[in-house]
Length: 408
Image 1: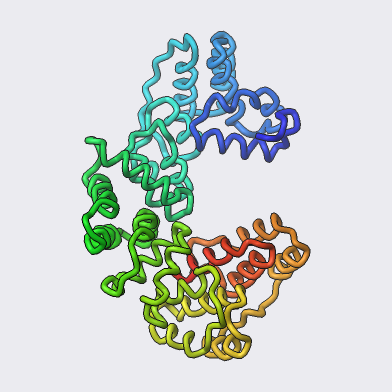
Image 2: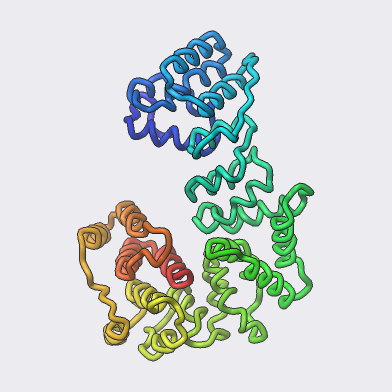
């Protein structure tokens, strides 16, 4: 948005269109559409944007002419063309009635998402299931969608990091007052309210347990921890709740409540998951983690190929919280080489040494690509955490390390 329309490159036009469609913002296309059809002439979406923008400007004659031209050239056909015609009809004096039949549509794309939701014909759920995970992030944030649809998408969106604890809490608070939500969403909304309003800590944690246990799959499990983060942070540390400390700390870390999580340091058992999360995630940890402590964590580690232990060591090494002897000994036991080098590791280390904060962030994002933490090599985590800490982003370094240990 800070780039003048006249200075857009072809790639910027592509990204701009995706952004407008993700937000179902048809009017947002219009300042760009005139030049976009010249610069991004191979992109059919900008050609189809012209009749929509003409209609929104009450230029129905131009809108009709553009539509006819695109129909003749078959710029878009089938449901994509029908959605364009429906969007044109939504403009000033549009006077078009278009029936969109999803049964004839094959596949799903951003054009269908944006135009359908902008014109009040939300696609059936099966089409969302044909799309990528990113669409859940779009859907969860669209204010024109029914609250139930947004809530159903929020689990995936929270697991992706699109929705924060605050956003998710607000969403389910709305769902709690809506009679048209599904039974599952309504139940989760009621339980979330109980995590704050129950009469004592045990009852509040009990409501959290019900949410955590009701999760269907790893992504929804992640989302439930995000949902309860603020409520978990409000629970006072108690030995009576020691059995729930792992999940309480996991939940707090997903919301960035690291100071609240750190209060549990005297409650957790050494070597437990909660202890490991505090070892990498808590601020101001004094002293160095010993080999014995790492070995205790290793003994309790049931993850595939001891991935949690590897991520814990990578995070601690990147943060400088483990001594060189303990690091070397534990790495040998895990058969882990944190010193592996590649063009990427050299690039992020070089950017950190030069204090290039933005470059480090971009390279960190590149290194974290993958469907799960099992796809991220532990030595990548080490370099990311080390580079972030070196460029003054200690909090981000700790939270990334904590997430790696929690969800690996």
